[in-house]
Image 1: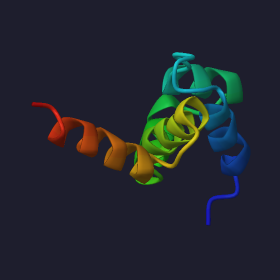
Image 2: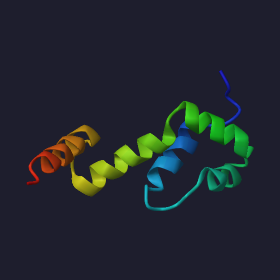
Image 3: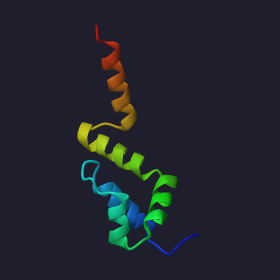
Length: 80
């Protein structure tokens, strides 16, 4: 296991920065002094963007991502 970087802290920073913050993987790379491609690969493998979006949905709408999808689906189906 790669212990060179504190990936938990790096991931938490990225997710906590918020969906609307526009903090990029490049920003994370520079802040934590990790090569960009390393960050990009790790983030993709661990679905950081999806996690950050799900956290944002929960904060923004007060419900889980799945619940939010259900609400959107029901709204779409009830349009006449």
